[in-house]
Length: 294
Image 1 (cartoon, rainbow, N blue to C red):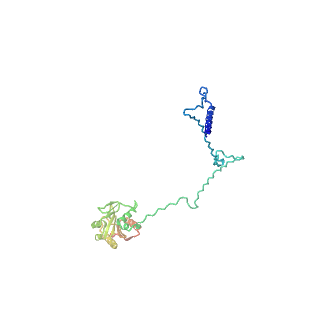
Image 2 (cartoon, rainbow, N blue to C red; image 1 turned 90 degrees about the horizontal axis):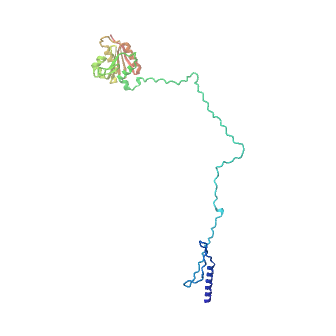
Image 3 (cartoon, one colour; image 1 turned 45 degrees about the horizontal axis):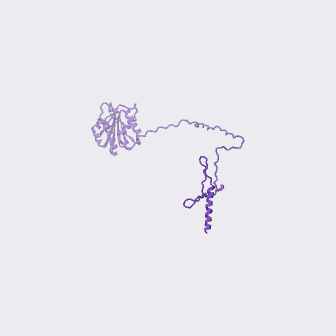
């Protein structure tokens, strides 16, 4: 065993010396080759010899398996739209010929039938509403009726007129009369003083120059049952009056609902008022139409 160990130790030392002597010295910067170390096999202190480290061999890595070409996803190339498609050679396309737009022919205006005029029909004016179509309150009001009749007069038919009593005097139109003043009613309108209690309103229209030329008194009776009585009393009072400065030609008494109108004076003026009153109100009735006793 000792021999064997000694032989192995000797062989190991020989191999290490042979390995050191086979290495060439590396050249220096000045081109000289350094001398080889002598006594490479000298023992170092300690009686041991260092063996040079064997160079480590790099680990060989196995190459990774590459995926076959078939496994790669297919890349689709985008369609190249930049280049126009080439159509097969042939005759060039002809541009369509634009036809002119056809404008609709204007329709001829329709001619009116023979015997008819092309002018639009004119609207006929609506007739004025007669006074009888007004509310009963307006018809029964004596002053309202008196104003309505006076407004139907033309400028040629009108005369210098005034209306009302001294406290309600109106120039050129009818006016209201105070029914509480019986003396004034009797003096200016020849109204029977005893019947003052029968009326609740009154109005008048007289000739400004002479009362005997034209005097009209309009009286509204409070009770419809007293209309006939007041008409009779008015006729009696007017016929019995003593006239001064001439006397009137005729007398007319007309009733419209609960209103009583007494008119006396010039025959022409009295007849004009009578006709207008009877024409304007269908309910108007002439109770008396007679000449005045001289």
